[in-house]
Amino acid sequence: MGTVLSSGKATLHELQTVYGVKDLHGMLEIIVIDANNARAMQEQQARQQGR
Image 1 (cartoon, one colour):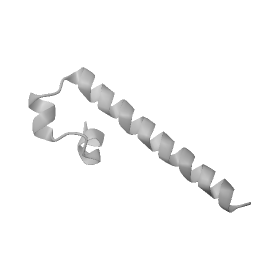
Image 2: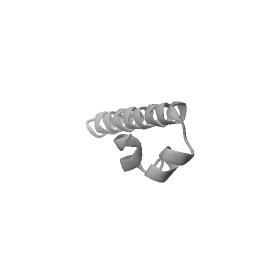
Image 3: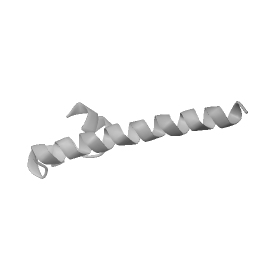
């Protein structure tokens, strides 16, 4: 839950009143995918700069 809160994907109030456990898991998956994509982009940029 802390990861979702600190990412700004939802507030504590929203997690307590609006979203369910499935929503929380979906948000966590989005955060993981976003982080993976950002890492891949950084690696690609580093390879291009190394040429």
